[in-house]
Image 1 (cartoon, rainbow, N blue to C red):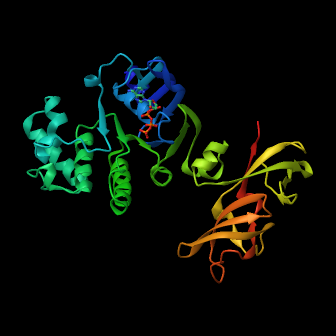
Image 2 (image 1 turned 180 degrees about the vertical axis):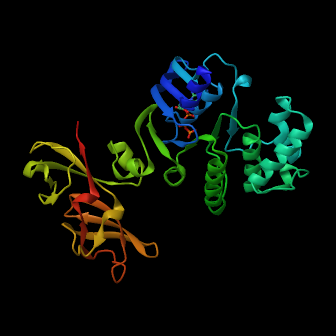
Image 3 (image 1 turned 60 degrees about the horizontal axis):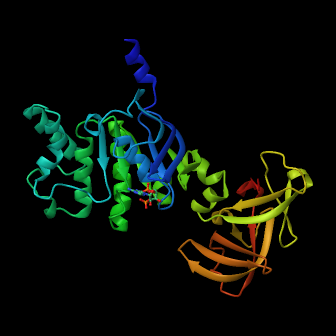
Length: 360
Ligand code: ATP
């Protein structure tokens, strides 16, 4: 009917002007976000910015003090936790230690009174999906951290929830396992077509896994966009710094917005998408990866002294001092050899490699 059609077209999850307070402390302010069905959205931000609070509000684990939350076009503010059809995966795997894998994964199905043969079939399918078929009889203590997290994922998706919530699910794993699980989670999410909301403070995880990233700071949204958008065109200094430790060079606009005069007095060319009046104060954002050593054919060239150099294989990270006035961070391909501390060199970048932020 008409309502089914409306449901099919509505966002999987929608936040409308959400406020959440713990007593007098406002943890989330005026949060609005619309999440398309089947997409993978990441809430990214520093510790304490409110990511977990928002995730928990979807599940009904914290109460909102203002606004509305819609799931599939229906208000859920008054729907109790047990009636919300939501899968949850936490950092601590939170498996039942005395239940075997089968009973852990079957939990949400038994709870929903699914008939036994169907439970067996669905658990088997979920375990195949997380690549642990045949592990039904094992106890969590007999599994590695990565395997336990896979079981937690199977338990969260087995009942085909409307939304899958993932709260820093990879942070307890070692570096290798973390990378493997990034790919794995993403694959399972695409295969099942489930809508996923992922919380992390790790920018690499966010960039590599998400369809869209919501960058948060102090309880509010700083920017929403695809990984490329938030990385390449940060809307605020906070986003530029949080994603990729960008260089932020203060300067003054000149040549009708085509150039910026830096603190050193040097003028650099910039590609400015919107006109800014000469004399306006701006911040030029330049990613460390935009630099090349020796300047080459680059339009802009800054000469500086290498303060520190770390070889990464293929490229090196340099801290560079420009005339005692600017300190730069460059991650540049090795040009012949790694520069040494104390050496003076040219560092080039192109106008397209920088973004201008208006001081206001
Ligand atoms: P982290 O990555 O450290 O978990 P986060 O971005 O997920 O951080 P939240 O856990 O959502 O942040 O917390 C947001 C703010 O609300 C923090 O300042 C936190 O101290 C506060 N807070 C969270 N839970 C409570 C609570 N139960 N009572 C009071 N304050 C809380």
